[in-house]
Figure 1 (tube, rainbow, N blue to C red):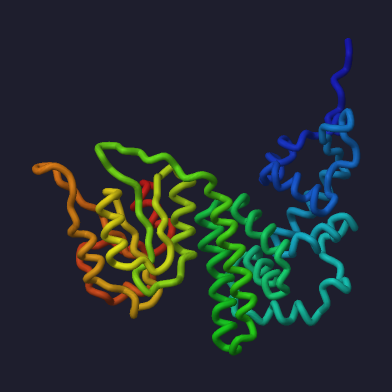
Figure 2 (figure 1 turned 90 degrees about the vertical axis):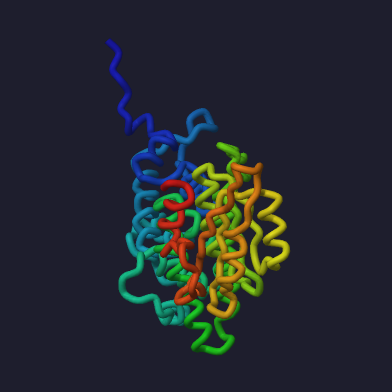
Length: 317
């Protein structure tokens, strides 16, 4: 009787190893392409087969990146067989001190610390990898609220307290967060015209330029198959009303970062819009997003506290 081959001799497929590690197969392929962490041998020269030594390297890579070590540094340490990254000329102590100076607080995820350090170094490849891995590992809502937002707030506070010294860090991090959110969504979801309901509209109120929270909500809704229309920054009141009239949305999310841009009158105007045949006219649910609405009188209009609550309100989960 022929003996079954030893799994260690045959090696693991990429999919099997990814499931074991709790990462996406694309992450393993990216680590192979970027950092040379792929299997030493390949079956027939094409198929990846991960032997125990290969697995040990990527396990170390997972531990290090989860602890907030930038991927390039983690890869060097993993290949060296260490669970702590070596100090090299590419990451001098001065940079570590600068990154550590960001006001992150004591209770943030380690991935957030790694993201902040990479942003301060202007290490765009590391920022991109850390953002993608956070989404893959935790899902978009958790990655947004517990990794991206704390890092963005810390960089913003540092910028405000240091003049213009950190403006380039804020711009780089914001750009890559936006890119990651758009990459997550893929193509727009098809409209679900159940009982005539239109898509969810997302727009910043006039004068409001902060779009990242809306981009995160848009990405999360699309990920769940909810059709959306994203209008972005500073939508004029007339254009907003025209879009509502043409689309007949089931809901309209109005984002205001600052109290000076929040307009209860505009929110009420949109909420009072109606369309459809006589006897079956309907209007949108207007959802107020952002800290600018705090303390503003907009009775009857929901104001979710964060991304997860907004998702529950707009897509049922």
